[in-house]
Image 1: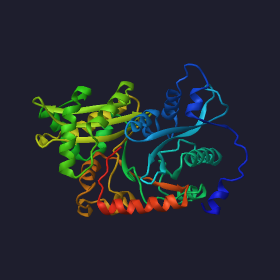
Image 2: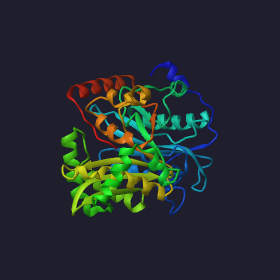
Image 3: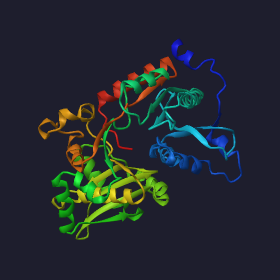
Image 4: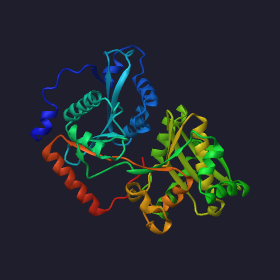
Amino acid sequence: MSQPLDALYTGLPEPKHIWITSPESRDLGAGHDASAVWDDFVAVHPNGHILQTARWAQLKSAFGWTTQRAELRTIPSPDAPILGGASILYRRLPWGQKVAYIPKGPVVDWAAPDQARAVITMARAFGMKAHAALLKIEPELPDSPEVSARMTSYGFIRSPQRVQPLSTIHIDLVADEETILARMKPKWRYNIRLAERKGVSVREGTAADLPAIQKLMDVTGERDGFGVHNAGYHAAATAIFQPAELMIWLLAEAEGETLAAIAVFAVGTRAWYMWGASGESGRNLMPNHALQWAAMRWAKARGCTLYDLWGIPDEVGADPDAYAEPESWGEGGLWGVYRFKQGFGGQVVRYTGAWDMPLSKLGYAMYKLALRVKRGQGDTGTRG
């Protein structure tokens, strides 16, 4: 470990608040549900995200990850308010060390440097105790020189690997439905109404629909070259999130056939279009337009003010004006989904991306080498 980074986290004064891990929090009171309290905190925090919920950690723990949560409170009591924290996911590397990963977090007030540093200090300490080679964070902060300087001041360096999309499109749901529709391109409004005229109906899916949904997912992955999750992953997500009304499957159907399906997640005032799939038949009926409009209406009805379309080509995020016209768009990759998403009238947003804090000099060098090997072999990855 280099001396400059060590200096950032050595000899710090006693924190103003108490650090407690989620297991310690669970021990503080009989019948106290620490995960529910954490998720309530994430839901109301301005920087909360579905990927920082305890339910998301529960999902990932069923598929090879181990999890830990750091919480910053005023006093070690289950009744004390949570000030900030992080849900940390660990994945074992081939040589025995781990990656400590905080997706879309930590959940802190970034305008309060002491609070952010306290949570990062906790996460660093937990990562080192878990024998992690690095701590990776992907905060949902804008891409700007100011944010980059802040990350550097905490001891992070730009990561050679990001997990979540760097650029996306946000749909403002504050206005009434007619205004939201008016912001869309005319062809998109027409296609939404065309789907209805052609007999496309949208309904909420249940666990019983998962086999049909998985068939569509597999078709989509094969057709578009995307990695897709398996049936077990979708089943686990449904079981964890749907009973809490934090997720909905929406299915577009016509004449008894399921044409397309999407999964939308929501927490607090934000919703995310996470997964989607469509078959080969009925595409001229515009089922995907109908699904996105239904998703926006569902999110708005439950109090969401923002709908995230989750992922577009980063070239657009880096310079939206340069890609204002279709003639400038590329082919393959995310360009196909961008052609679809851009018509809904949202705002292009670009995040600061992934930042790494090396916790082991040798381990981090091996991590970067492993990434180069993996990229040389080709890897499509999956969403969420």
